[in-house]
Length: 365
Ligand SMILES: *[C@@H]1O[C@H](CO)[C@@H](O)[C@H](O)[C@H]1NC(C)=O
Ligand SMILES: *[C@@H]1O[C@H](CO)[C@@H](O)[C@H](O)[C@H]1NC(C)=O
Image: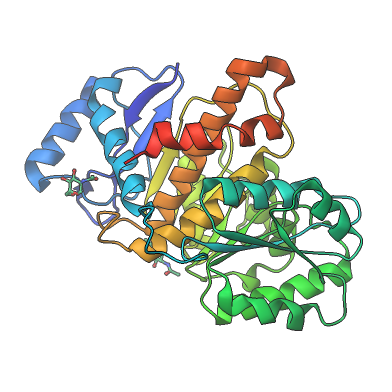
């Protein structure tokens, strides 16, 4: 169980690439043949560069500890240093679009997680009714009650120039009027080249209108299994290949124009249509509502950091892949630490309380 594995894949151009790709599978055996293939590939083509995973082969733990270490290092590389020279806002001003009458917890969780990970300011754009509720949870969030107004776009656009990333979907709901406003906000955000993380009912909107996000290189979608299938049906034909999870994630990313897709599950699979990373940091068997909001909020900050750092700091890999892997790893570690203390009664609030120690443990430089 939880054996860490390196995966390699054929790049489909008649040669084998070994990759900056890490996989873990339950009960994967040490495949001697694959080992030989990997050694041969390294001998032929030198050190690992990039890989497209079409088939995932698994190797034994001992061969990947160093690779995992490398990914941790890449995340550390993108984390900005804390110095007294900076002014407030430089480490991240993150916007959250979501929060309506029924759902007020999700945007709060996403917003507070962004702050705990290291953002300087978080703005929540929600409906009029949801605003006082979200404000009462925390004095640390800036809350704008604009999402159900007829000038929602103008209200959000005022703030867009100052935002480094936008997280769309936590507690959004499916009201047509709201979703129409969100559509316009997405267009305006794309026009400003701001990274966009889409989760929950934001993904429902994308499944209705994939063109909204198709090919936008700064988009990251974070579907669970159900949301993944819905997106799949919107842009691909035939059922999801349940035997080849990483291949499916790669394919969905490509069908959406190579935007970053994070499939949440027993292991999180992350692809930009070119590489597939697997995050299998130990979490727990406890799944509580709100965990996904911790992921989307922290991903908002890390996406900003990663794009700011650029490919030199991520060793040539797509910065958004590194950000996504970092946020998944952090979320799972928070789950693990909270579970150690609270077991079955673990909730998202307990997980958020672990962000500081989990972050230091994983990424302290
Ligand atoms: C960066 O890439 C080089 C060459 O592909 C590899 O040898 C090295 O281990 C990588 N370093 C990290 C930190 O990933
Ligand atoms: C997406 O990436 C794949 C693999 O690099 C490439 O073959 C394909 O042309 C790209 N698609 C788009 C729309 O850029």
